[in-house]
Image 1 (cartoon, rainbow, N blue to C red):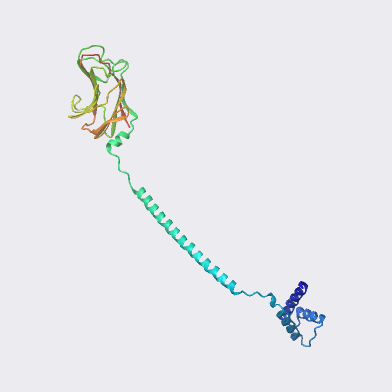
Image 2 (tube, rainbow, N blue to C red; image 1 turned 135 degrees about the vertical axis):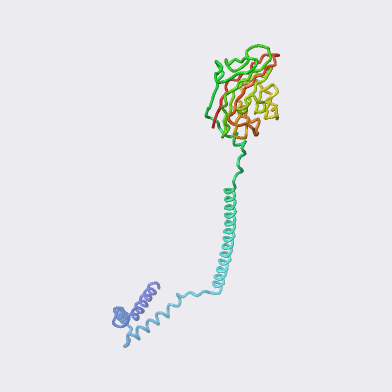
Amino acid sequence: MQGTEFETDDLLKLLTEALRRGPGSPQWHEAIEKLRDQGIRDADEYRLLMTVRERLQSGQSYREVWAGPAFTRELMQRIREESILSSGKSRILVWVSVVCLVLLIGSSVTLVSLISRKPPPPSPGDYLSQQLFLTPVKAWNFETTFPEDLSVKGDLKLSAFQGLHFPKGNRAGYASVLSEPVLDFNPSVCVELQIMYYPSDDGSVSVTLVSGSEPTSVTGLTVALSPTGYVVTQGQETRLVSTPLSKQLYTLRIKLSASMAVIEVNGQTIWTGEHQLSSPGVVRLDFTKNGKDRFETRVHSLRILKP
């Protein structure tokens, strides 16, 4: 059966090709010879080919496939489902795109706002506190002899051996050490002292910054170390920083610009405010003794620094 079907198909293809090529073609002669070999005779070759071809083709109807009603319904249902699914995916894709676009715009606006927002400028006091002073302008070390470029006034003598201090004795009195006009407040300057403080001492030590035109004035900026704590005096205003002082080495820094002053002790700011000093300025160290007990507090060094 399969061989017969195969041969019929080949003959049908041969006849079709012969009719397409026309009389005189190799396919035409091959088809005529094929039919005559099978015992088919006809005077008109063309009509012979057409007749045999139509008969062969009419026998191929069992190969045709027709879609029934069930197939048609299932096909249409699949088409509708695919359309609905595709429509849903499209809507989801559109919403996701919209949300992403909104988030992108919001992030961009926030970023631009943060970039364009300028931080508030630091205050003059904050700027002065953060400034580093590393360049020495003048330095005095009180470890051996008293420096010649400093002057001393008062009714008590001072020793500069292993720190500037009062020698042993119970007599009350005071002594002041004055520098030359070495402070230039424009743009800024720092006065630094190393002070070894003994809280049981009967007296106080202070550093006062005054304008060079009035080195003995009491209206400058003064920082004193006393048993009650730090005492800051600016003009007629006095402020007590109540911090009990222990026996230790204190690093006192007074930073000054043209109008502002910041006072630090061991890296901690204890006072910030304006000053009324003018360049050039003078540094004055004041030692006061009450005479009831010994006074061993010592100033080991004094330095003038620039940024």
